[in-house]
Length: 186
Image 1 (cartoon, rainbow, N blue to C red):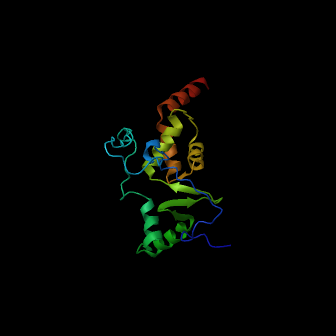
Image 2: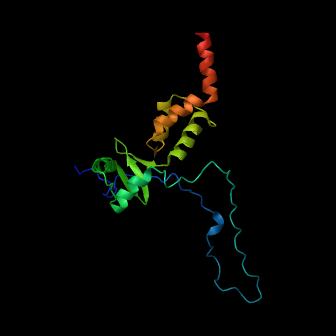
């Protein structure tokens, strides 16, 4: 069995899905090849297909992560440039933990204990994901570890997930109201 280092290519039996990239295909973008390539003299020139519409997003929902506070930079620097900390203990810790991370098409993934690749996302995006699972449209209102399990099963990873989930559940207004009602009935 090979060592689990982040420098090996992904094996042929492992399939990944880039869930963070849009899969939109515009029907008007392909050129039709049914007629002559040269227009006849006096004919109207062919019109270009209309530009696709741009969807407006609300500001603040998908904030760009601060590269100075991004936990992934430590692993990316090590995997791409062999950069280690000057402290021997920190360098040894990083070399040991980096074995479970792998780069696929420039994106950092963590290999779970059962071998599934999870996309590493910034902590800010992770907190938004947890709050959406907890109190979003399909509001689950589950315990912190259940929320983290749901996020990880969707293929995402960040190291502060459990503490972020505890904070979300602890401060969510609907959960606090329900907890007070249960306490009054007991």
